[in-house]
Length: 250
Ligand SMILES: *[C@@H]1O[C@H](CO)[C@@H](O)[C@H](O)[C@H]1NC(C)=O
Ligand SMILES: *[C@@H]1O[C@H](CO)[C@@H](O)[C@H](O)[C@H]1NC(C)=O
Image 1 (cartoon, rainbow, N blue to C red):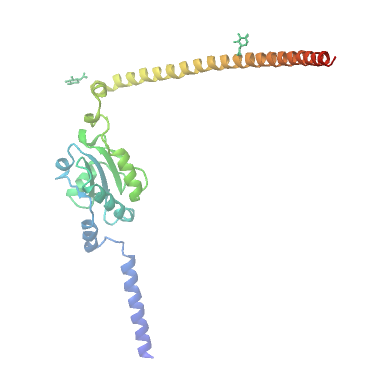
Image 2 (image 1 turned 30 degrees about the horizontal axis):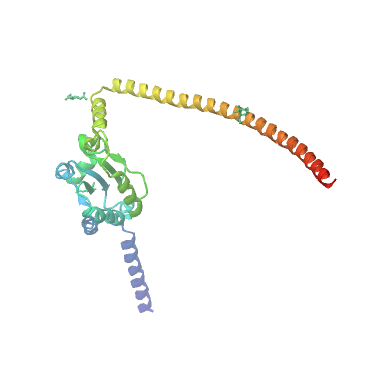
C-alpha cells in the first residue's frame, strides 16, 4: 500500500515536472534564449554595427524577441530567407535584431519606434532609415521570398537615387529640394492634370460612342436598302428567266 502511494506521488511529480517544463514560455530561461539567438541565420544587427553593415544596401530586417511566440513561429522561414540571400546578392542584406539584447539590439529597436514584435522593415537605409517601410504580408518562406524578389530591387526612390534614369533623377532632386508647401502645390498640379487627362479621355470616348451609334444606324439602313434591292432584282431576274425559257420552248 505504502509503495503504491509513493509510486503515485512519484508519478504526479513526474507529470508536474514535464508539464511545467512544457508550459515554460520558451526562451524565458537563459539557455533557450541563447539557443534561439544563436540559431538566427540572418546577419545579427546591433546599434554598433548597423550603419556600417547596411550602408548603401537594400535591407529586410526582422526585429524580434526570443521569448515571443509569433517571432519563433517565423524563425525558420526567416532563416531560409537569410540562407537564400547569403550568396545571392551583395546589395541586399537580410538582418535580425534581438530587441531584448540590451543595449546592442534594444537601442536599435527603440530607434525605429516599433509597435510590436516581430516587426519586419524593408527598403533603402539612406536618410537614417526614413524610407524604410513595414512589411505586412505573410510570414512563410515563399511569401517572404516572392516579396523580396519583387521589392528588394533597386528602385528610383528618394532614398535610392542610383536606380533612377537621368530624367527621373533630375525630377526627384527637384522634389527633394522643395518645401512641404511647394510639394503640396506640386501634387495639386499633378492631380489637376490627372483629372484633365481622365476627362479628356471620357469626352473623346463619348464622341466615339456617338459616332459609333450613328454609323451603326447608317449601316443597318444601308444593309436593309441593299437586301431589299437584291430581293427586288432577283424577283425581276426570275421572271425574265421564266420568260426566256418559255421562248426557247416555243
Ligand atoms: C538641390 O539643392 C542642392 C543644394 O541644396 C543643390 O546642389 C542642387 O543643385 C539642387 N538640385 C536641384 C535639382 O535644384
Ligand atoms: C451608307 O450608304 C451611303 C450611300 O451609299 C454611304 O455614303 C455611306 O458611307 C454608307 N454608310 C455605311 C455605314 O455603310
